[in-house]
Length: 158
Image (cartoon, rainbow, N blue to C red; front, side, top):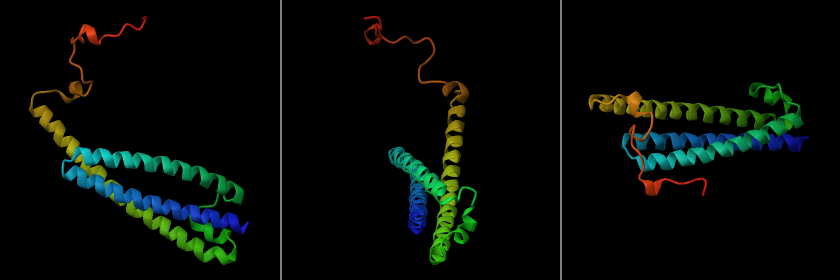
């Protein structure tokens, strides 16, 4: 049973590390937005997407371990009391590190989100000032009534 607790604490530490990486990516995203660097922003978004997949995997492992340990209804605050006495201190440290990582991530993510939203509003203002209705412009890339050349059409029955 102690090995399962150690595995769970290791998983929580890995989760904290992932949140630290996401916080770093949020800062990189904010820097890319401020520099108007769409290529850098695209690269950061790809890395965030990969991290999201990693977090899904961690969540599945967490659910499995929590079930095996019988900690389904135990909040993180109370994890220390549900661990063997020799792991209680390590549990407290791990939970504190996870909370700290989450707080930092939330702060960085909120800042990046605000910057992206601000820039999107500025782009919308520029589009509106150019005389284009953003609601219509956002409906697609193709102008109404434009047919592609016959060479570009595909006969799906062929």
